[in-house]
Length: 124
Image 1: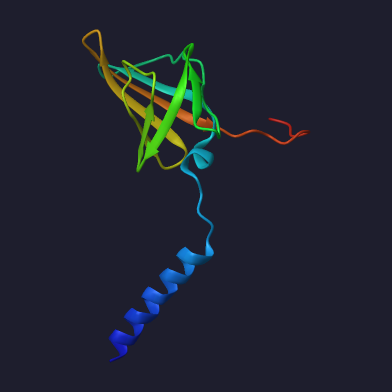
Image 2: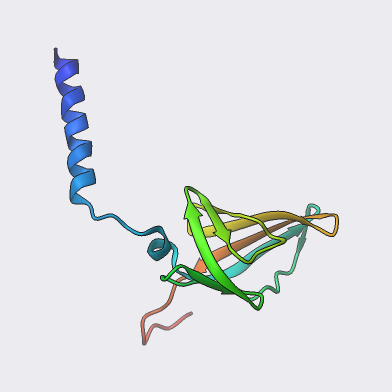
């Protein structure tokens, strides 16, 4: 009896949390500037010289001179105009990881979200 009561209480608590918390649009949640943090080609680390990936709140993006729209489904980011990179995996800690093969070489490119600083903040 106590187990049944705690189960109902748990379900009720989850329902209340889902009802009270406002829904967040995925594009708004991930909008921001992502700096290239790592590059691995065929298992060897390299210097990441990529420009930042910018995801805008309206569902558009910009990187490597290409512009388009993006879509988030679960843990995956899909860039509409990306032909060689494919989908990126959204990782905890605000990272996006692209794994793809280009010219016969396996690439892994990691982008990390750059947090904007408030005016007057000093970087030491």
